[in-house]
Length: 326
Ligand code: FES
Image 1: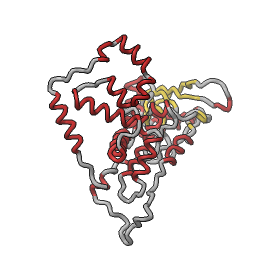
Image 2 (image 1 turned 45 degrees about the vertical axis):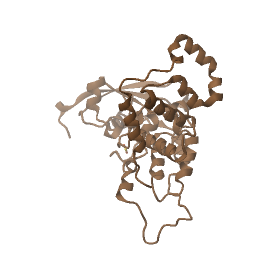
Image 3 (image 1 turned 90 degrees about the horizontal axis):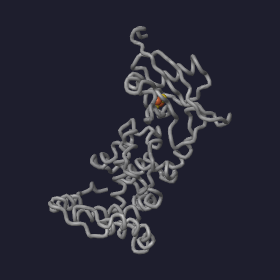
Image 4 (image 1 turned 180 degrees about the vertical axis):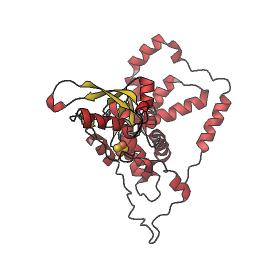
């Protein structure tokens, strides 16, 4: 129990919508008095239990373990059970609650997660053993500590979908597997016991790996510091190392790097050719000419910057960068 003087006014604006009833989504305003460290979830449960029993929300553990209370708190993906109201009120003057993005609303703060889970299933999140290399009896693992260390972050994931909600690539293309699925995929790709390393990388290149925008919003949203955007970057690197630049996205990334190593700055015209090949470049000719009329300098080969030797040294060091053997 907290002393009355420690309570602060906490204005809540909570998203309300019931598609079954029709009508438009709206925000319902509630005024509570709470201690500053009270979790947002406790505030919402107080509303549901004492003010408005029709409010729909999901939660279970109330301890940042189950991941079910993820929602937008003042526009940021958060676990409501571990987000205190005090700092939110101090920064925004109120607590605005929305359901997670990129998933259809079933009612109020409850979203339909079937897309999220079906994307997860697509990556086959389990060890796929190679029948020609059975596990040695009595030795359930052959991993070295360094190999285990490569995926130390991913087991922390609680599948709360905060990253999926924050991801603009999911919003643009629901076929994009999403940050969590890709981070989990990475965990199996670097597992030396898995027998589908190349096949997994081949499939994921064809099903959206390169749609990631590298915005890092997933990493910012993740409450467990899994850092999905870094795992996606690692997957891209592994895909290029194992299969070369075979996809449009990988050709663009490799071409970008080569451009920088060559002159220290981008040669835009060359990069288009490297990314799309001759046929693709011809298809973009109209747009290229319009662009060149506005910026004729794009047609010239860019000058090599001063100090490009330093850039090349970095490039060579990156090329030599040794991976832990699988
Ligand atoms: S209620 Fe389980 S993570 Fe918040």
